[in-house]
Image (tube, rainbow, N blue to C red; front, side, top):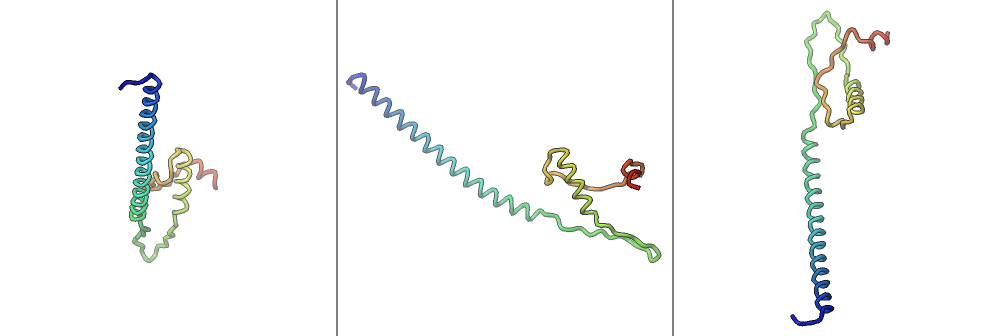
Length: 114
């Protein structure tokens, strides 16, 4: 290739610009592919979460005729406990699961409420 330095410089700049355009075009195409995959996986995960929702459980107790048993709905208590734990631990409520609740007989909370 015979030519002046200016012609070689212009050719080199042209090649550089074309290469940069190709790289940016490929990056934009990859960005759209990733967004498309993300939308597909979000729809699938939303369907899986709906399927995995636990159904309401019923507690069955054996009651004798002479006994009176008060059944208490603990869903509000559980919601309050999960909210307090979520706030204290900086964990989303979906990451917490309460398996059992036990009363403490010698708690200061019990003594102050009476």
